[in-house]
Amino acid sequence: MDKIENPKVAEVFKKYPNSIRKKMMTLRRIVLDTAKATDGVKEIEETLKWGEPSYVAKGGSTIRIDWKNKKPNQYAMYFNCKTLLVETFKMVYEDKLKFEGKRAIVFNLEDKIPIEELKHCIALSLTYHSIKHLPMLGI
Image (cartoon, rainbow, N blue to C red; front, side):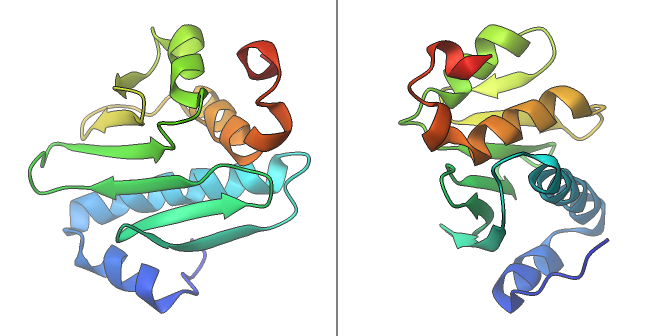
């Protein structure tokens, strides 16, 4: 997988337990691959927000990923809860993805990630500001 250029982000990944790091690197790879394949996304920035690996594209809404000690069997992808993103994802993928409120898609450690559905959610977030005016984000 691609080397993490931002040393602060790399440090967060190093602190994850080995089994979790693999899961988090998978989410990272899905975000970066989706960004490359999404029309309108020219560049994606990998940074830290609230101490979590975060991904943002110009014209998009930030995506964060993390695992927390308090829920050791779960990791998540977080979206801005003040957008329509997670509400829309729930309408479309309630049978494929698990959600936490208006802010996250959550995965249990043993889950098989529904890749295509997750990539669609990521693409919508990375282009959010150009589609937020459309009913159901243009889906």
